[in-house]
Length: 372
Image 1 (cartoon, rainbow, N blue to C red):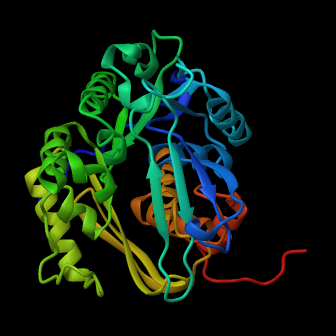
Image 2 (image 1 turned 90 degrees about the vertical axis):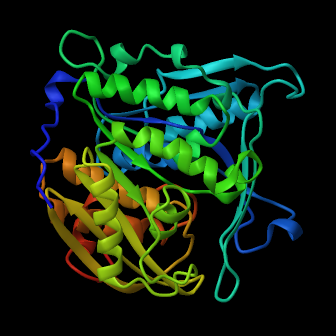
């Protein structure tokens, strides 16, 4: 396999933002230790696959991040704004859409999520049809101003989006394409998380449509994230020898799958996939493999305890991206992603509550001694 030319990331001094995410932000309603269908109360959080990455980079790693999204202008939208303001992600690219009073034409997404425990897996029930961000058009954002470098008053070093955003409507893939094409013109790195969600694609063509959309966008991607199911369902690259249940993830098979992806899309400089096997909802094997610059790196699975697994992959991505933006080597970035993902799954909610010192300490190995 021929090693690609080492990519150059724009200097921080040339850009206002280190990283920008394009995606939906939903109101997550969490029944805590209970079940959705028997709950009498919920805790509210904000969350979304692409947003979680920007928030992690801001709150844990201290980078300058922004979210490109849209919300219906009603009290739910303003609650989401308030939650995002607490997360510190720049909201200058948030587009407010007038609300019609009942949500016939535009609304905000809701995501009911229960955490799971032991033999009971996590459950998600989203209510996100006809949301404001699903109706975005490519021309709604001045992409060249946002993603450019010297000569613009903004500028961005890294753009992140993914398969969740592209599944929201027939129009969102065109929005992602416009953003990614602008990023390529301006030397902004582009990452994409396949993040396959059956519930989002089921009524609009299923896996076949997901693969069609993702394959069209792959030539614009530099860094690709996903897990073994994502690569199969959303891109059409099955795990060699897999049974479809992913009860085990042989390292050699995962590497073979990644090599096939890189051969099909030689523009990819980096492919990173999490390795997760679930003994139960609250005890998982957790590790990762990445291909970068012609070389594979691996963090072997270690069993970790899970409080809330939702958002673990997003926190892995933000930790990995931080390593790249900090100009660390790929092995360091991979270890950072694995550590950050594990810490994020030890707390409730979609988004990280970890600090950088905690991540750095976790990268050295497990240590749960009291810190005082």
